[in-house]
Structures are given as C-alpha cells and as structure tokens.
Image (cartoon, each protein chain N blue to C red):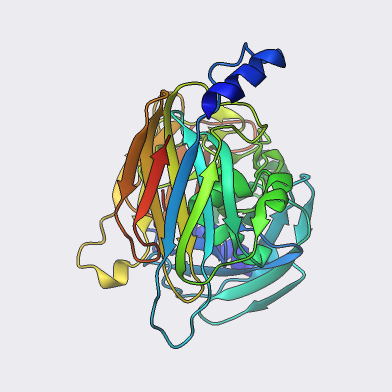
Length: 163
Length: 265
C-alpha cells in the first residue's frame, strides 16, 4: 500500500521528503467508572519529539474552554498557545468504550515527520474525577511495531501500532 | 492604610522581627476560559498558606499582560484574610502585587525619646528637631507576588523595572513543572543581588510533622534555582539587607515573597 503512494509522491515531485509518511493506529479506552455523577472525560492525544516539543495533535475531545486547562500537559504544551489548532481539532467528548484513531505520521502542517524518537501522549481529565497521562516512546524508522501502555485510573490499556 | 504600612515597615526593621510572612494566593495560576475571573486571598501568617491576619487590600494591584497596572475591581478586608476579585479579559500573563515602591524613614532620639519620621536622609536633614541624636535613615520595601496566566503566556508584566527589590523570572511561571528546574534572579535597583537568603516552603505544613522548609541563597549573579519533586503550591521569601550608605539612606532592607504553583508533568 505504501509503494504506490511513494511512487505518487515521486510523480508529484515530493521525493525530497525524508520518508513516506508512516501509518499508525492508536487504540485507546475510556473506562466505565461507576460513580453517582459521571461526566465524560476531556481527552487529548498528541505526539512530541525528542525535545518534548509537540509536533502533532491527533485528537481533542472536549466541551467548555474553562476546563481545557485541566488537561494539564496538553494545555501547557499545545492548548494555551495554539487556539487555531485547538479549534480545528476539537471533537465532542466520548462515552466509555474503545476508540481507534489513525495517524499518517505527518505533523500539524501535514509534513511527514523525520525518522527519529517520538512520544505518543494520551491524557484524560474528568470533572469530579481524576486525571491520567499515558505515554509511549517510539521510533519512526519504517519498522512495524506494536507498543503498549498500561491502564490508568481514567484510561484503559493503550496500544500504538506502527505499520 | 498608612498606619498599617508603617507598622509593617517597623516590623520589617525591628531587631527581633516577629513579622508574619505576607503572601497572596490566587484562586488559579493557569486559566483557559474567556473573560474569566480571578479571586485573590491576601494574608500575613507564620504557617505557609494558613491564613492568620487579613491585611489591607489597598496596596494590592494587578499588572495586565500589556503592562498596565490596575486596582482590583472589588476587595474586602477580613479578619484572617482579605480577598479581591478581578475579571481577566486580556490573554497573557498577569502579575499580582501586594506592596509598593521603596519607602524611607528616619529614626532618631530627642530628649531621651525614640521617634521616627517618614523621610529620607535629605528630607530628614530639614525636618529633624534641634538636638536630635542617634539618627538613622532606612530604606524599606515589602511586597508579595503571584503570577497568573490566561492562555498563552507572555512576559510584559514580569519584566523587571530596575527599581527597588525585584524578582527576575528566568523560568516563566506558567512552565513550572515537577522535576523541571526553576530559575530566578533577585535584583536590587536592577543589579544582581548576591548572597540574599531565601526561605522556601510548601503548602500543607499543618499536616506534616516536618515543615520541610529549605534555606537557599542567591549566587554571585543573584541567581537561585530549585527543582521541585512534587506538584503543588510553594512560597519563597527573600530577605535583602544592606548597610551600604547612599545619599538617601544609611541602610536598606527589603522582603519579597512569591507564591507559585508547580504543575504535574
């Protein structure tokens, strides 16, 4: 599947890009939490480079701006400075369940990321609940990989599959 | 207000100072909403963030992200703490400051009685009664600071002015995170203040047997560093003193506190 894409990229004169974009699947889980007053968590999914700089916001599920700051790391790394990106990526909050996200290995500007070390972050914050941060370090090197992070209070097991 | 300030000054200068530590505590350090509100507590206390004495909110001000200084829109002086509110309509970093510029006062003795006038050396020379002895003029300053950021941080409100005892925020307060180094610099009239003692404390002293305070000191460049291991609310109290004589004073003392929040990584 990558080959024709690569050939197409060459045809379009994009051959100077470092690599054809990787394909990745991210499976995250919002756990069922038994509580008198359950509110859906605010969730952010993003990638940082080896210098801990954000390079790609993959998903943001949220409602009111007032509570965006409670997705602590997301807010500090991305949310507070990039209103346009936040608005563009905003989606509705989700009910408990398993969610599959796909990422094409590009950054926020749509450019393929250079090979190297990156970290996937999933952060969830729930009103009248807790906050969890999951991270998976990975290498973008063209090798297929499957990596996992353990379940946390507000997030079930996380899987990153690089194809 | 003047009496209270004078009292605070005297306490600051008294030999065995029983002065409480003055701090400001904002309801939030980081905000993400539009036209959001901030509430600030002001108290003087011995235990960090356990309110003890409500001080006048008259000296409380807010420097906006554009650098303009404003009074809080409403305030109330309570017995244990005072409170002030303001709506934050600009995006960026706000500096909350309780206190003001340096003040001068002159102590003297006449007919065996200790007296004081609020005057620097030059002014005091004209005002002192005949026969005044043991004349000492002091410069004093006391302020409590906290920093609040709405959306993207900026530095306009934080820039040192080169006047009096100031904190230079090397690390932006919106970026204070557990396990990351925080750096500050202390300045006196724009010049690095070396060898200044700084006491660092953390919230919840009431619920620990050991308060766990740390004594730090600024280096030759006036710099100070601290790497918190835990997220939470902290206080630093810096005490400056100098016996260097100037045209306006024989000695100088100043204290400055900063209440800050360390976020989760």
